[in-house]
Image 1 (cartoon, rainbow, N blue to C red):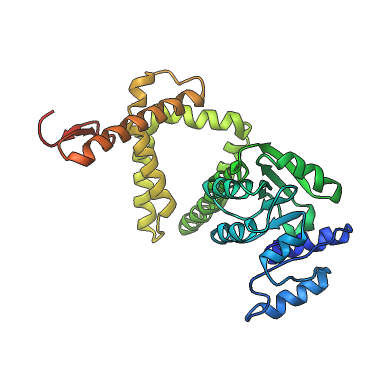
Image 2: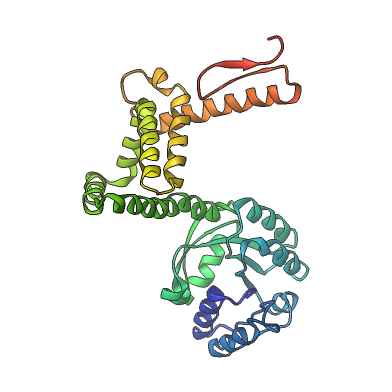
Length: 320
């Protein structure tokens, strides 16, 4: 193991309890302020600490890298010097999908297998048995190796970074909901309407399954009603400011819906709702791509033109 923080300790202790010979390295184990704690936790887990990444890799067939995302490329680079055919390098940290792809290239050049793993549960609650997603060309074999030891692995494809992408893009929604709930409660408290608002939200969400039904409803109706909803959100922002609540999430919501209204989707689809959210997203992506191309044409010379997607006007300098 490379890294012996909370996740590393849970993995190390759990795998050691299954009879696996585990060795770990953590760059902070010999220095304050965490050196003594890391050494004590390693003793309790029954995991000996090694002196370097290279020593861990030389001694191991399966290398689990559990380091913060920014440190992942350095760890992979150090490991690559001692990797070779027959070894597995498994990045279980929070590196971005493009970082995982680059690390996969580096590792696979050595002949070793690379696996991108995203942790989807709590090591504190589940020990080493927390659910994970795995991607990369070595993902299937990794799953076969560790499932008998109690690890829970769902393979989501051969492309490294796909597991990380699922976790990160899920966080857009889950962390966004967290922030929205906090902002909503702060606003509701100012008028003592918490139970009424939360009860109404709960009833609305209970009407249909979230996916695909709620998603389909929200996206297809937005294509037609975005302009009205954006103006409503402008008023929401004003109301929040009047009661002293900073509308961080609500301001961003208004901006997003204003942008959707600017794309001309209502005119494109007419008065009838699109039949499926995918049709809306296809059109959004097409129009975004056109806007980006026009912006790139205009930017280098300063004499081109572009379409202002907020108000529908064509603007530019010079002749056209």
